[in-house]
Length: 162
Image 1 (spheres, rainbow, N blue to C red):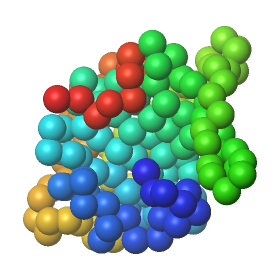
Image 2: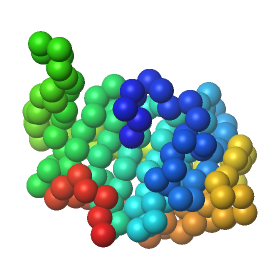
Image 3: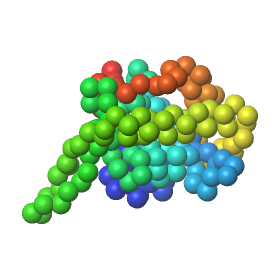
């Protein structure tokens, strides 16, 4: 994810860890959505600036940025990380959402992924750009979405995978 969460303007050019990526324009959404694959097959989904969902190579949610808050996977649950400035340094304060909040958060994320799958299946999108050109990232993304467990799970750790 971007170091500054508000600075995600040119993911297509700058998200080089995503070796295959695509930027999409979708109906009823002002922001462009970006999806990309790492070398090991791990996927990142950027629904505009927010939310951002990152999966590991086993298709488990490993990190997310939702409503201005960073989350990481820990023991199969999401843990909230809040940046706190203290004496000239920034530290991450950790807290675990209660079960109801965790369920609501995951439901919202799953709804957004389902919406993406439906828009792609209905060909209701326009490709703004693709890196590398001709990589067929949309087709690869459709395949990945079809194989994604419903509901998808949360990883044991925030690592991208092997």
